[in-house]
Image 1 (tube, rainbow, N blue to C red):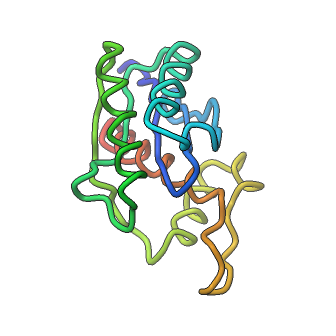
Image 2 (cartoon, rainbow, N blue to C red; image 1 turned 180 degrees about the horizontal axis):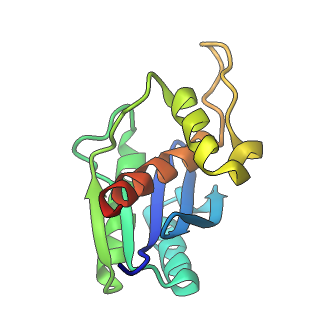
Length: 152
């Protein structure tokens, strides 16, 4: 079976996370504040990532099932998926599976599989603190993981 090159994108308030995997190997991960500025910036980010990594598939979260996302974040997610499709790539939107008690438990499990992301693992803060910036990377990785689990 050929190794699937996956670009997974996730958006949160004021940031976009991107991960690139080739089969089960993590090639690249990024957080972009600029990509979250507008739908145009999000599209430019997707186009740049596609040109750089030439993925077989681009994955984004399904906006109709996205939980706890604001209107502008949902627009950015939709724009990223549409940009991938318009660039001639297989674009997949997935409802995000919540297989863990919370984002921190999910990040812990993903770090076990991808130890290179250990320095990026978000730490749980107080309930009144803002969500850690790096959670968006693990949202993107979780989306990619859903596809890779089906491939194996």
